[in-house]
Amino acid sequence: MIRFLINQDIVEIDEARADLTLLQYIREYRKNTGTKEGCAAGDCGACTVVLVEPSNDASTSLHYRTVNSCITLMSAVHGKQLLLVEHLSSGDTLHPVQQALVDHHGSQCGFCTPGFIMSMFALYHTNSKPNRDDVLNALSGNLCRCTGYRPIIDATLKVCEQQANDQFSQREAETLTRLTALKADNLGTTNIIMPTTRESLKSAISQNPSAQLVAGSTDLSLQFTQQLKNISTLISLSHIESLKQCTTTERSLLIGAALPINDVAPLLLRHFPQAAELITRFASLPIRNQATIGGNVANASPIGDMPPLLLALQALLHIDNGENIRTVPINTFFEGYRKTKLAYGEWISAIEIPLLEDRQQVAAYKISKRFEDDISAVCAVFKLTLEEGKIVTVTSGFGGVAATPVQCNELQNALAGKQFSSHETMSIGKQILFDAFTPIDDVRASAQYRKTVLANLWHRFWLENQTQNNIETRVVQHA
Image 1: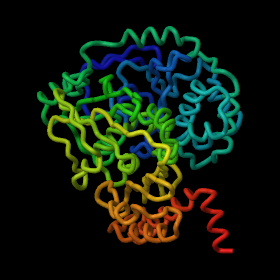
Image 2: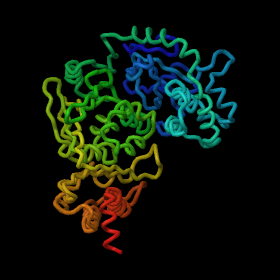
Image 3: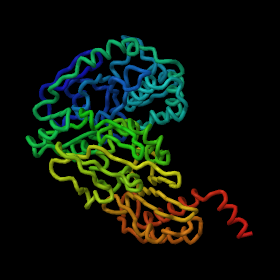
Image 4: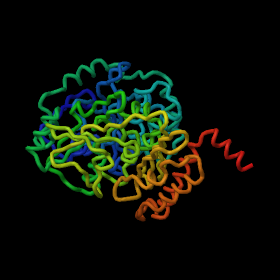
């Protein structure tokens, strides 16, 4: 059984299609048509809804999370409260975020407005007095083609000036109690299986050999919404707590494979602040609220954002089968286009990333047509280890230039022992990267563009990581 709240109503689902999306359920079964379908891919935000769940943050009892309902599967809503745009007003009185959008003339055709309202509503409940960057981040998953963003941003800033005070904040204690009571031992339906332990996951896979494993569903759901494929049985990983833990040891960061990227981000960026560009530009906030690093790696897409980072950082993948866990270096994990070393009955349980040493420098770059909510044409990550200015190791990770996420071992072989600050190091690195791969031409970029950009990113990395002393030395030498 799948049990959740729709506003204040308890809903219990005994049977549902495994590939039923939340948007389909909302519009076709519940007849709530305020939530719209635009792209069916999580790109436009017209389908944005809010899921509320008990918070892990001691400062608040509930956490409000925006998601794209068009690519959210029904297993994701168990034990949570689903809030739609229809739930916000009280009779004829608009919710504060709705009234703010009216007051600032933030809506014209209105098709995208419900999604914007729900993104504003989530920020209203999660960030008191946000700045403009916070607002831009909150609205990053919503597209507007009529009004323009200025009045929408102004409305969001205005309504969030004060602490949230609405019918939902007034009922937080009651809602928390009701959500806690929704927990059940036997989760799921006949064809939507939701194990809670690694042992029950092993059993579920054994009993349903053709079932598809899913965590965030932000990639898998596109098979249903855009390719119109069907699936009979689904095994969700999102209710296994051991897959949603994040811990730090003396030497490494261990990330649960089913933990949403937005939940991982604070700890990941604390240890690897250089990854901020990849994290903040990973699709949009609603996508990061669902997508997982484990899923991004297991998909083995050549244009996934996280594998290049993990390759450069020399991550280890913990692979489980319910009985034993083995570790696999990520640089040996990808075997071909969409092919990995995962055997039948195995799943990624965690990603282990070695912590940086003081002598190591890291940079991550994403080149795409749009700043956010876009797939990279080229992704490049470099990790450099120096000893007295000389290169000890240089590890790398790239996306968009080969059939798999890939490293460039030639870079390490050619540059080891060389003075990093020398122009020779810069020139050799550029030439190696220009020649290293044979990317394809596609709608995002030509092969020549990709090769040129990749070489130039090494030049950028070289420039950005020169010490002040080295810069002064070159100035004297060229005077």
